[in-house]
Image (cartoon, rainbow, N blue to C red; front, side, top):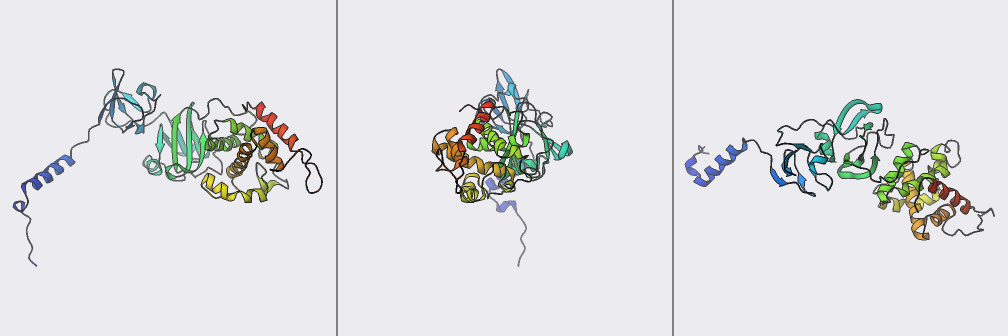
Length: 333
């Protein structure tokens, strides 16, 4: 075989010019994009510049803008002045910790949506977080899977220990300012872990916080927020005391609703299962009170109904008590 030396003469002039331009341009620094006037619903990259109210701002974090996120309002996203070159480290944001009680490696993230690859790029490995600190007025949505899939856990305050259900299971995160339900506050007697469970379900069903109050009232009645489970013959039925035969009948519906197989050892799944059934009863029987009657007494309950032993099924007393607790928590329906 004859070896041939490379010759520029063998290349058309335009090809040589293209090679030269691409080689030369490859070593030029990339300048920040001047994006003109700031606008909502627009994707901005780090070091993009915009104008707003006569001033120029430089983007500190990639994000898609929203109404209310005007540059002067979100210093975590925009820095006044031209392109700052190197993005300064985030100091005001949500801090995630590798260990409980805010121990081990710590990484702070600002407002934005973070897939697993973006978490990795910021120094957070997969399935790593055990505690977090959340600034006042911020909301954190922690997702079990990449790309915001699987179970979602919502935090609006610090948590020194996220619990067994969440520990080392974070694969993507959404961080934003504001609360998903600012008009609803946690009742003082409801434990923080229970409130997290019910708010996760409330967010999943889009109830605006009111459903979380109702679920808290049910859990108080059914299991005293879990304190009544140890030693109880019904301990295997979980925080909302869904009987085994009932939950088995709903396994397929649970999977299609939540996108995962039901795990009875997960307290979050116990609440999610009971909430799904209760929501179905509320829709079927027209209102919350009637939903509670049939959640406790079954679809065919009626005043004076008895069980197979002839004992009265006092679903009305159950509904009275739970509904009163719910209204006492500030329930609106």
